[in-house]
Length: 119
Image (cartoon, rainbow, N blue to C red):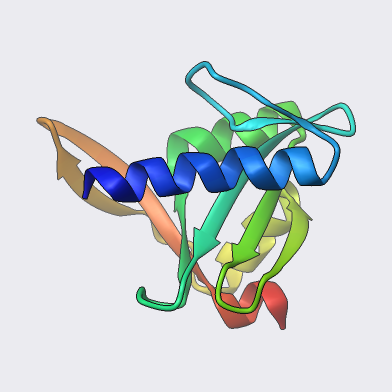
């Protein structure tokens, strides 16, 4: 599973640079693009076709009026959506934050389906 984290970090950096932005190395959002904070979410062929949205990061993206870069690795395409639009798409799903326990903490998240993002 450690390789999954490295794969995702490389993908984040590569897509942000490809689009003319600057990846960040600190904790928090993934980078800056066109003066806005961006968060990269990806799905690839061997996983469920959905994107995980973490509540703390989403709250930060809303506060910063940031954008998400959704990447469909298998189809080699991406789409940029505002955090506000992501909230609207989650509302279509009933917008019910799910909870996972990791390291003794409760992490809230929700999913968007690939079809919701790419239409």
